[in-house]
Length: 572
Ligand code: AMP
Image 1: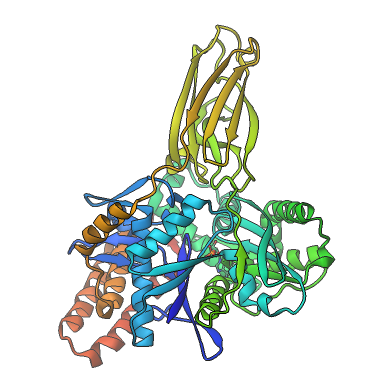
Image 2: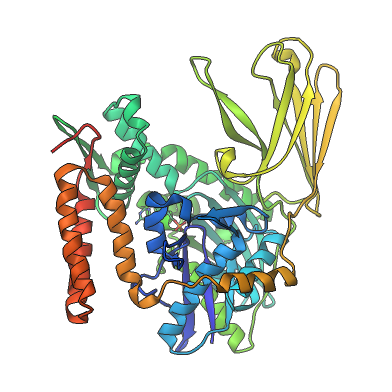
């Protein structure tokens, strides 16, 4: 059996082709979505999925998430005292999905089809295959995510040539791809997108709107735990509004219950700037392929954020017809991977033209944002070359020093998609002296040139003197070779995956730790009493008692989390 895997940035899924259709496989908690999170437990075992995600807040130094963005780079992530590459962390996720598939099928699984973003470079594709190898999976075939989404909607069964557009709005990125099928070959003809636009931005905007209604002193807004809870409340509100037309966010302070009512109309206003930004990549993709909207056969929705009615409406308006949305947008890529796996098992594998001649990451420098009171805040990422640009490419951006008569200018070069450079990968530093003149007179044109071999040349030209300073950065930082892979397989074997049969209890306990940290005073004591009772039942090892206790305890945690957010000044 070959399994299909959507190895996502936030969530991963596994599916198979069986009885003539693609079918999702639930994990040991019964969920189709497994968070792409990995945590090293104190007992030395590896936790993957929801248990690991729960530990992001309580055990940040032992837990990793969103490592997909480091695939194909040599960035290491530290968990406890050990260092891991993105391939290795991905391998844990793959191992966990493999185990779920094996438990579901009752047989050993040794081969997989894995999906990757269309803009993934050669290095990132190789790293994904290596992750498979480290997880004990043979990966002959990688499929582009938009191709998989189109396969899930049966694009390969269209008789004549046809064209699909995939509109994929995830948590942090927006990707538009136009696919063409001709003579049994599927090709991603164009892809466009916005690396800084996704469902998370909408959640943040809801939070901002909440703050507009209820002003809080800066001190509160700097309290990370309070902000996390508020963010979670805004996320819940957003999801509720995908199903009903009204909801309330509530915060209990010392003397009042602050409420924020959100309805369809408010959401339209909040999301307007984002919705506007969704048009541009669609227009660009159409322009690049010389197609008009009415020449597309099907519009496919992918990514969790396309569940929002506002987004569906926009797509309907833009294309003058309803998008295909029978399949859950967060499951469509995995189901397509299973279709490809099914085709491969029948030896009817479809050919795909793979685009790899693109800059896989955004490349840019760190800059400071100057606030209205002249204070400047550094560490912000300013891209010069946007991810997904066809290479070779050369782009120029103009910069000015922060101060008059500044002595030198330092450009730290980064690759990545994060707003803050600390979350991106540092590539190198270009430093040169300036003349003692005003900031305006010290303008610099910074040119980035990126070639097919992944070589990046950074050149700074002082406008006043036309003097240049250059730096060359070697591309495609280390991929693992066969010998290193063999060594790491041995090293990773010393780490055991947490057993599946106790993962549910482990997940509940990880969640309990997080919820406990959010509570105060009497509520904490009360929860402690409940925990002790629950642990007592678990220790009894009586499965008849354990199952209902698990359900009851989870429901209790749901109830606590559904509650209003408690303001830090609130005491019982
Ligand atoms: P993905 O990266 O495809 O998993 O998409 C994750 C994004 O989809 C997150 O920003 C979620 O908040 C968003 N999302 C998931 N379900 C819903 C929903 N029912 N309504 C609105 N947004 C959702």
